Image (cartoon, one colour):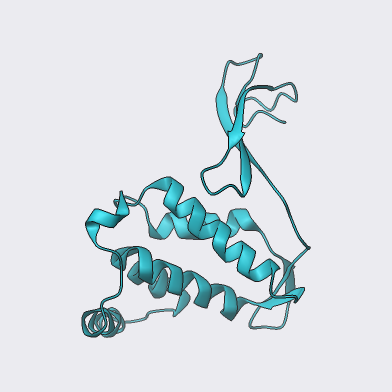
Length: 160
């Protein structure tokens, strides 16, 4: 595995264990060249998914891109990182088990929105602002009103 710090190809595994959701192997690694420490995850990939964009363009599904967008929405929120990983793994499992190779980007967005709605209201609003392409403050207000009228997100006690 290439070191993300110095680019060396010679990293060593120091510890391996199942990730909390059981869907991956978590490996702690160290680079002998720069002594950098980093974590990698090894996961089963059931099929190669293609995301069909609104324009009709097909691009390979990237779990990392999904994770980045979720983590961006959850930045500085009191959500346990393991819980976020379980959520991301659940979304990927849903997509892979759908039986379809081509997945509309709208479906990916809806699955993320639904999962975030149950996890954290602020992350939900943040993600919605990008996914629904908010242009004005009233767009935020309408989503917040929607949350007020139908609150389903987990309480703060459930997040830790």
